[in-house]
Image 1: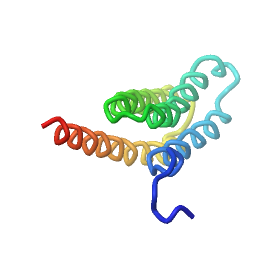
Image 2: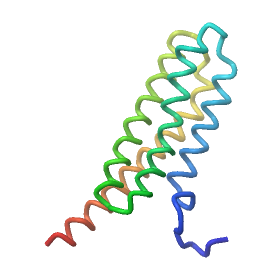
Image 3: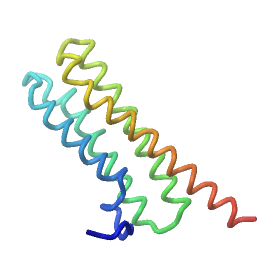
Length: 129
């Protein structure tokens, strides 16, 4: 495929995983009752959309500092998504067995984003010295 080289944000594991999470969130919200369409469904989908979009936007900025900034925004959207999913379960809109697979993926993605932020920050600090 790309011989392990990252040529685009689409080659990043974090972008691919975030796209999978967004897809999972969209599929899950199809099960929500119609009265939640403009409330919880909208909130879940917007926060899920925001994760890969911010990763892609940060990559496109071509500067490590700006990429770190957008990774932080993606991380915030990830936490927002988790919160909406957990609230949906607590309010009995959806059952926990439907939410668990997405939460498992968000936990992995959270660690991946943090790791990439750390690597970029460390590299920036070395260059600045």
